[in-house]
Image (cartoon, rainbow, N blue to C red; front, side, top):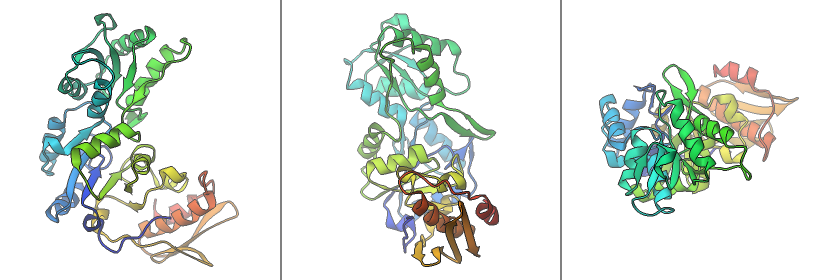
Length: 340
């Protein structure tokens, strides 16, 4: 079940651990309502930390970008998967070791901060290979160098394995797609190599976030079930899913338990609203003015009210029907009624 909260989430939790792509901005522009919602949260005393699997940019660059969008941020409020993977590598190789870096400036800077030496060729004697999102300008030859080094047995790391990333023009390939290129190029090896991954939803990213924020009552805020929400479950913290990025309502309804958030909202304005409870009775699952149930292989919805309350009721019905494996009931008519 989704959880209820009688107070605004910005009052119930001390720190928002915010994903960036698809939550705060997309394609370099602010997501609608994000600037005002975050400014209001900060003014009300909630700490803001920006936790991203995107390893391309440095924390300072991200903070400057946020500030230009109208959300003042300091570099130490930004936590990236580049920082998490750099710490992971530094714990495995000697100080000053060479690391074949296939990614952007953010990854190179994170390695240097850990006393490691980024290099660009498999012939430079790297002690490790690391891949991080490098943006659309990442050259094919960089992937070839990574594949050559991994094929020679060099330990392989990845900042994250997100297959896609939201942009202002739609969904684009993420770092996970580049990791798959190296995986395919080295599948002749036995056993086939696998990278050690640091980013959400895995423990190294959660550890990095805890070390850098010191949050006591954190709330993860994200748009992806398989990174943000699963990462919150892995870290034992609550999560708010916003529907401004990758995940749509149908995917939320079909989510298995590890991908189910505590709360859901249309966008970041949900930080300032109490979260109504979903109540189960003989008619189904109620939230606001809506009642939802599963019958005949479909999700059914009756009533009226706020669309997000209808979605919450549908989550109750879908998750109860799906159990531990996820719901397969057809939600199309119910979601069409909500305009979702």
